[in-house]
Length: 229
Image 1 (tube, rainbow, N blue to C red):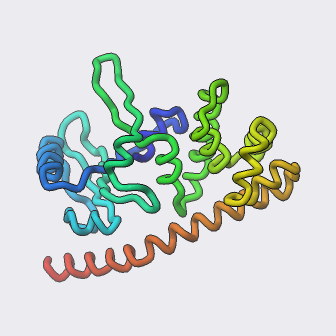
Image 2 (cartoon, rainbow, N blue to C red; image 1 turned 90 degrees about the horizontal axis):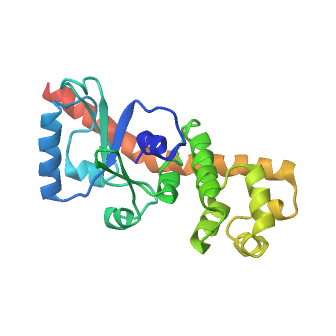
């Protein structure tokens, strides 16, 4: 669901860890624990590996110690900000297979774009790349939901101008929910760039507000671990 998924889609060159979104059910946790044991994965940070903590939106971090994967970090989550529950995300997933037949199940591009809307500046060029790649691969035979996705999430001013010219009626209809589309229709490139920057800042603030109570809870976890030790 993170950087490795972006690598699969061609929107990133490398990622140093693997992020997983898992189904929050006991049987699945048991299977996960067995896999972590096989990888000799040890928890390396707060919070504790607790389904209740995961259900609130926390991530649990592990470092692998088994041969071949030694040093690899694994992050586990069961909930993502502003995204649907696991079952719906699973239905929309993308599946890649390697030459051996091993399957890799990834968040769909639209869901991955939503997941990457964080406070981190480095995530926003990745979002731009994900949308651009999806457009390049599908623009010759666009589906209505893809047009809506491109108009909703495109971050490049040049791509937005192209989209507004290609799909003028859809762009006009969606301008009510994404006002900067009106600047792509006009077009007004300088103001469009300013509006895109403002949109990023607003999303970053949403992410900050979402994580604020979780950060406070992390401090409580740290105090509890220090007291226990």
